[in-house]
Image 1 (tube, rainbow, N blue to C red):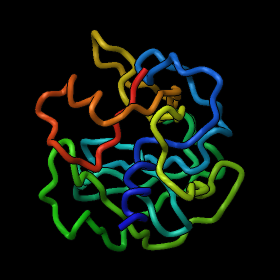
Image 2: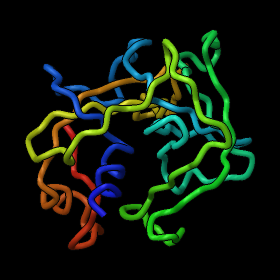
Image 3: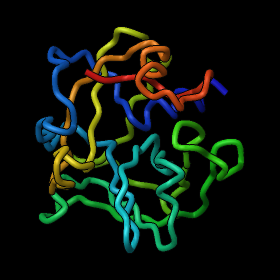
Length: 191
């Protein structure tokens, strides 16, 4: 159970000891090409999601990213300019939190994908080093991905963007998002 919680935390956050915590992915900065060797592009015909390579044959992503014809691309920096060591894989099997797709926006949005073939480590591909415990309140964490980078108009970047955020007590998010359940495995983070 603790492993699932740690993996859920990793879906959105990579622990880091960042010096700056004032940026979001919206308005964040372009990630350095060597900063995200574990980041995977989970691609289907009409949707793109981020994922995390947790070992040579497993990728963690969100349940809402489950589609037919999923392709997992590793070693991606620019979606328009391929790296020479990019690797594409397809799922062998998929696992959902609690063996269920009955997630809500705030809970159980976890999917583990077992790859049909293991990934080879390379210059731009390596699994994330998993932390021994989830991030604590007050710690600074790094988020990254190809999500929208603007608030007024949906703009998706060609390269992943990074930002450092602060971890808050869950009660802080409950005050802002009144529909959050009393208890949740959701992390509360922001600037």
